[in-house]
Image (cartoon, rainbow, N blue to C red; front, top):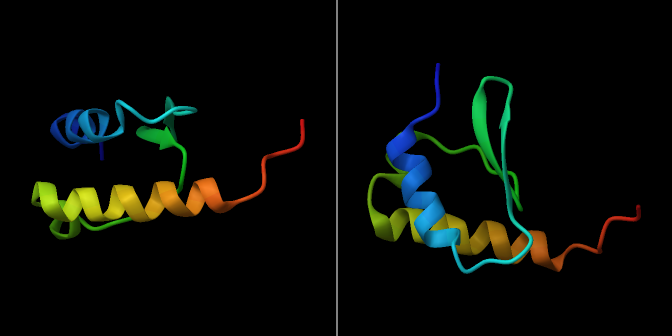
Length: 69
């Protein structure tokens, strides 16, 4: 299944102010690389629901130690 462009736009809006974010096509879908979450469509139907998961995911990703290069 292709990615949902409307959902991608909603994520871009919420993540616009976040630093260190990249967007990539992976496995036939779109990925926002900051914290990995797999959610069902009904879990992100409203802006409030989506904001909750964006906050949880980004907070967790930022709590991790920096990757060694």
